Image: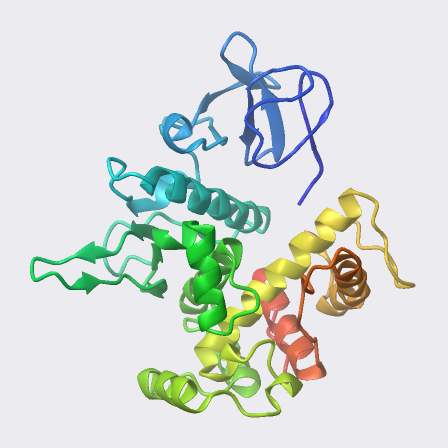
Length: 343
């Protein structure tokens, strides 16, 4: 992520900042321009263009701006269902989830990936449902699972509760269960539908690298949860869950590609050059995946070492084997609309 500063005083601010701690101006982010603007007399403007705050600013502290006739920002307008804000705790959980979604949209806007708003079932659009578990009339609990189906991404707002997310992370053996990771994984499924399944050449290359997507998905997941991953999974997969099915391998790899690119952009923005490889000044538009991988590996080693020096677990507990690097190259080519590399 880029390094951001207050438009009024130039002080460093964060991507989710609402107020500048130095000058006190109200802040809001212009997503297309990737700049943090400071309000003057309650209004935001840049180079003659006027902006309005997202209508969700008051409820969930959304700090994005809109410059068109829409009342919602480019991230919030994709929402189809939101939680009942009259229920205590729902607004706070939803706010955390939306903050993570804006991180996702930062990336897909940077790449200008297709993101039409979903209106009909099969229109190829993208939408989000944020749901809470429900107590049914018979007293049973109806759980809503995080997932993707035909462009609709569902997130259980319980994921916005840190303690509950940690409990699920531990029980499911997922070392990188974060809200940002959820969004990057689930939107990977969406882009598989839009950019792989619809392109015969890319689909053939996908099957050579990731496996056969036509394998029964339900049976594959059951087998994974019953038996676990193969003992040598780290030789060819980015995570144990990626071994369950070719779709999950793609989604996990897509999420890690976004982790890598955004992490490298952030490192460069703050001058954190690591290792002997050449710097990557613009990770979002790097020419090839190998350049990214060669810069990312020493960066993650350094980050993990810093975490350990603070008594914390590794921030990035993953290994980029050669097969995984080839899969990352496939994602890179897809994101940049390049021909799919062969395995």
